[in-house]
Image 1 (cartoon, helix red, strand yellow):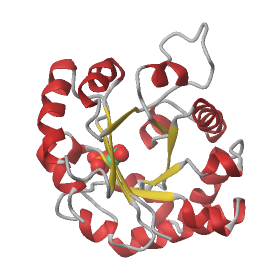
Image 2 (cartoon, rainbow, N blue to C red; image 1 turned 45 degrees about the horizontal axis):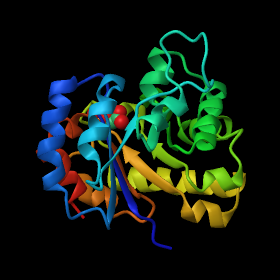
Image 3 (cartoon, helix red, strand yellow; image 1 turned 30 degrees about the vertical axis):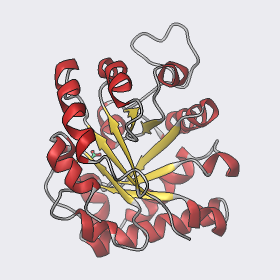
Image 4 (cartoon, rainbow, N blue to C red; image 1 turned 180 degrees about the vertical axis):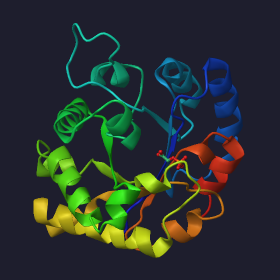
Length: 252
Ligand code: PGA
């Protein structure tokens, strides 16, 4: 079964209002003919979401948030709810990025609540998983990935899972310029699909899109995305420049 390529640009804590506006104005014309073959999403920081919404209307490019909280509303200073994101036109949300896990202490339990709430609210969650260098070198990649997937999806039903995207992002490849080889990435993606098959069903596992993330660039994107179990990418550094990100979107 053919899965549609999905490519996200995770801007992290970069780009204010002015930069977002300039970026979108130059990016949209570059990728204007790609919407039928690629689902492209940009992930600006929260204060830039409203302007992204305005400028992306009708463009075929989607936008989403880099995080959210699972409660509906209330005394949660500093947090943003799923319905607030939907209210400003966001369609996707990144959940459990390794920077959130490591710097902000997010656990699989918290992440499972966020994935659930995003799905219930109509957002497409991009659930991030991936092992550290030490974990890979000590032969624990499979154990770590299995645990993250099982824990983070603990509340997600089979029906909800149809709209979840997984991003396999080995932590040692994020922002380091050290990309997983296409073979390493393919092996890990195949493994992720086998876990999804155990947790849900083989039909479901064949449908779920799995992005690769970690130093994706215009130079390595095509070879990665051509692997049978790699359905696109989550791109950090190389998504900050509209020309370089457009090359990734148009690489296949
Ligand atoms: P990178 O980041 O492309 O800069 O390695 C990827 C990510 O963190 O999603």
